Image 1 (cartoon, rainbow, N blue to C red):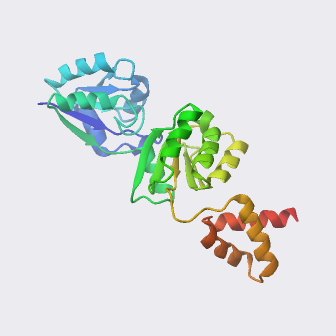
Image 2 (cartoon, helix red, strand yellow):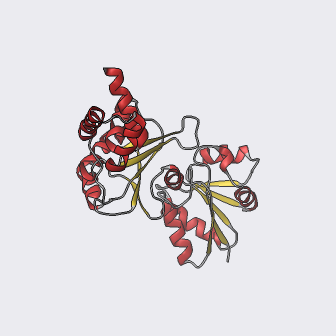
Image 3 (cartoon, rainbow, N blue to C red):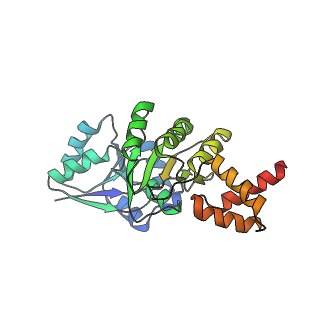
Length: 276
């Protein structure tokens, strides 16, 4: 029987399309795309003239039936707007249908925003839990976060710019002031990965309006409690009032106790000195 290829496409930088992906997209007679206009830009960049057909959340049942008929006699490639098909998009429905119909389903690996953010987060990558987009409603969002409070795994979520600040507040209320990486516009011109604790991330994005696609990577539960801002300020004042150690030495010592990054403690001490 024919093959369904799941072809991962760039999440921003067009250079991230693999050689194998280019070859497959040229060889198949048809590409099912979540947004044919977006995909056509990519295909034009690589000189790929393969026919496109729309496959998205609003037509997935009717389109899947037609695509299964196509698979009876020829191969098919599936792409999403960006990243890996079937991850947080309607491609999952087609994959299920193709598997049940006995077709071979083959992944063509490549870009994935959750994996890219996780790998660059600086947080544990040996075990993690990916839960897609955080719920839109505050109560549902807090309920979901509460259900993950005691899990030891790194947590990965997607979020939209206009809900980010509110979601960061809910993260702190539900999980405490854990370490977090906020990955924004990965591989694009204005790429940013903010690393710190949740309260600092909340303040940062209150002051700087977030834009673009966002992935959140949050530390799992550890045996160490991460200190609050007020506790850290008190500890800095106490340490500098009773110790002859250098700022760098104080920051290193407090980092071991507090769960804060040493660089952030040092920056906070510098800010306190500037105020004085």
